[in-house]
Length: 183
Image 1 (tube, rainbow, N blue to C red):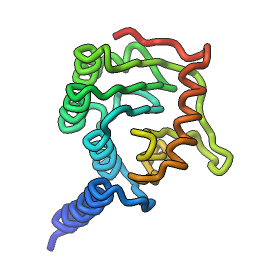
Image 2: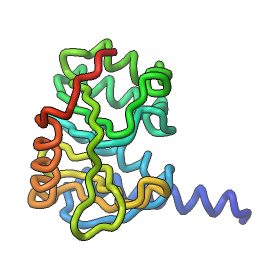
Image 3: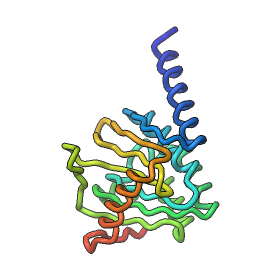
Image 4: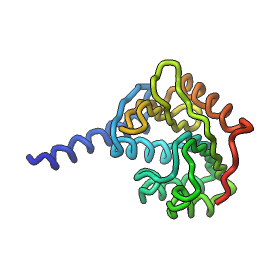
């Protein structure tokens, strides 16, 4: 078996595990690293979210926010009435508005999306680096502790930690320093 075949097999096993955890709403922590794992988890969160998703991230210029499957999953989530709040801590008008795919979905579903920017970063007491996170329906999350290498942990049925992340998000999102972004 070639290295590429091994990588695909390992990625497929990871995808199956993440899908199992989400489908069965298992309260089990999982870990991930790299863009491929991040994309699997975030796609799964968007697919299984019913009501709301809150995203604290750097910007909209990543492989994830430009991924066709992710964009399609967002569109389906919005068509089913889901709401999303996005807070970007590294927003730049020039680079962020260049991602036409996600910008178009946000424009098409502007009643479902609130997009803001802030200069604030979040460093949790237990972490050394700034973090990014996505939390959905007050129970599932992906908590990125290394935003460069996309190292994260998550869970698909952890209301306690999800509510902590939502509280952090809500404080930042409603802060006077959070400014609405008009696409």
